[in-house]
Every structure is written in structure tokens, then in C-alpha cells.
Image (cartoon, rainbow, N blue to C red; front, side):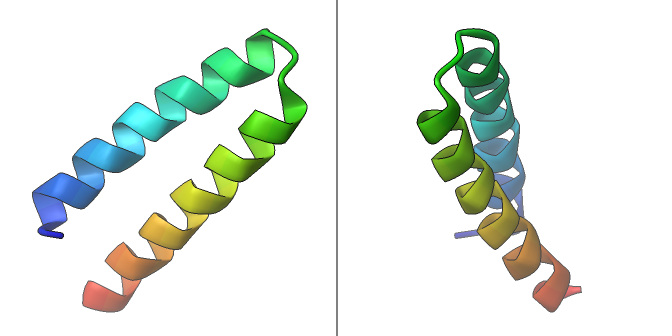
Length: 47
């Protein structure tokens, strides 16, 4: 994935995590947050 694709994916996943949290879907939120963290770590390694 390119840097731009990772940034876009993080942004979309953040929106989905916020929605899951607001709807009380804690398991979905936790899963999405883990994916976001993984992508952020990948971005950090590239810098």
C-alpha cells in the first residue's frame, strides 16, 4: 500500500470506529482500532 492509501484507509477506519463506538458495537470498535494501530505502526516504520 502506498502512503496515501494508508492515510486514506486510516481516515475511513477512524470514521467506522467512531460510528461503531457511538452505536455501542464495542467488539467492532476494538477490531477496527487494532487495524488502525497496525496501519499507523506501518506508517511510522516508513518514516
